[in-house]
Image 1 (cartoon, rainbow over the protein chains, first blue to last red):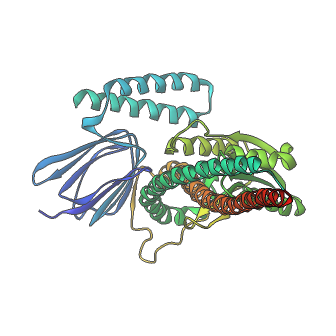
Image 2: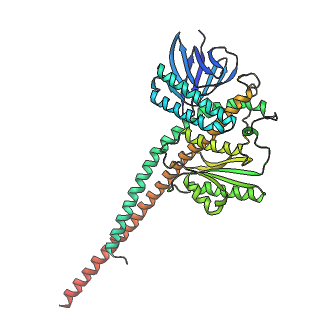
Image 3: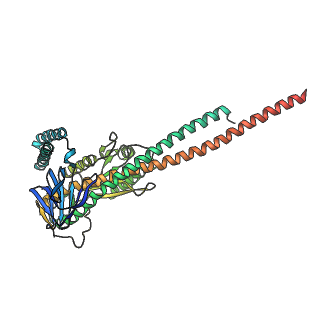
Length: 136
Length: 290
């Protein structure tokens, strides 16, 4: 099976850089499976789980809080705002973050639509984090 | 001539000073290594961000509804300077260099009739600039209680800047910080943040990409992130530069203390010998007189 170069970087470090067969990324408008030879795309990400497949098996699962991905036929670059391996995700931290995000959304009720939108996105990302933590 | 006792005390006090500066040098060296590796780790993200921006920004910069973060407000009247310095001193000319650079910038801008606002990041810069430009400082941000600078701290600063931009508080934003060249040399630089200077487009790049959701929406999310990463980079450079500078300064201090100890010891021994000689003369001439 053809493989492509997958790179996952967060502002703090380079998390992953190797050849993989397939990656499933949580794009803003739905999950997206990427194989080698994909048409060039730039997508925004929502909070969710990235799974990496190699040799027919899921070898790596990471939670990202949001970010961007650049897809080219021979490589995929994911710029994550924050990325944690699913195994080291903590449930209590996730629920705490969800509570904080919901409070922020409530506080932003009278703010501009853009602010409300970012607060909403944060809540959704935190909710995804809780779900991922529960599933792990 | 100083007495033997006072010389001895003096030598001891310089010795303990040397111990302190030596320890500080060692601590700075260890922290420098950590700061440097952190700066290194942040580089891939910034590089890829730049590449993505290049393929995105060029196509949208010309359009009239391009986001403010990219093209600015169109005016050139109010300048915001974000001055990044260290939290602490004892690092040679590190903070003063940035301060002096910022002051020259403020003077130059005001000579052109522009309004200047200042945000200081780091306590030392605030102290330095307050003497002259207290009325122009709109915010002071400090990370004195943080052990390690993370991306969150940078987002705090960038959030503040974009809030001010939305409120129309400034037209052009420049970031002033010490660029970390190597351990010995850090140079203060001014880097324009808003309007964002677009990275050069690769010739083969271009409108090949599809976007999901729309180009505008991605750009609207990418630009604040880019602002954050630029500031993050500056903060990391600042941290690494601070430790580098502190290391050099403490190394010099240690060497100077060593020289001083040598000089004082020589002086001490000479005085001691002079005393002995004098006593001998006194005894001999006393014996001769009998």
